[in-house]
Image (cartoon, rainbow, N blue to C red):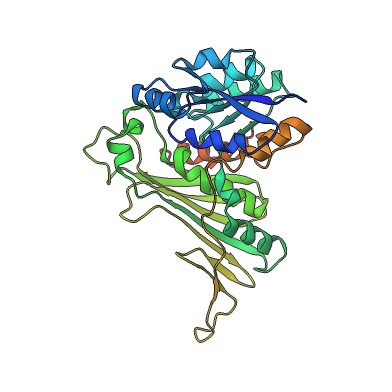
Length: 334
């Protein structure tokens, strides 16, 4: 079988996808794209052997490209994904897959027209050794029955809202852009479907800036087995970037901390917790790409499949809507 030819569109975090594709022997990156002068100049100097383009449409419609990696600004993801699918390309996209419900509907429709194509998103926390271990513990009953999960995305980079491209978009959601990692983590850890959400948000940390939406959103999510998840996205926090995870079970409680996590097996304050030294975060931005290419070759599902991507985005859309509503919002299926 000839190698799959990949193109990377957007060379911010997308540059890290180049090495990810290169780890699979059945794939080679043949083209790169960025419209920004500095990124284009960087690519010309660093990757002189690769084709360079400024217009993404050139690669999205090129029959010589089999796979595209989309790492552009969030507001153009939908248009680029649909164009890629319509031209027969498999798509790996940086989160979020889109920003609006109508966009998610359009992507699902485009994928249904091309059912053999693969789509995935870079929900990279699934590759963290610490969270892989936690998932095994949940599934083998180490924590007992899970009744509450707290999953907080502490971004700690407010300047990316107030001074970066996010603040220049007509609409940007901190839940779509960051909290979706925690949404996917909760769904993946528990294997449960989300039914409904309530949410609150505010814009105190970014007040006076050009950013026009909540910079902090906190939600309660009802899972189908009765368990509850508290999921938040906090871009304004004054602390380093961190994925705060607490899992409360009937037999034990797990707390992600830095540098080690903690496992509590007793309610007795005199019984010490167990240190969990498994690597965190320990995942590279391109680590999901090997699985994605292998899924294309074998016509199987990648580690993050299309249904996973749509499920996480469905919850995020519901949380965003609930943060501006007066009551709970049902999670729709797309």
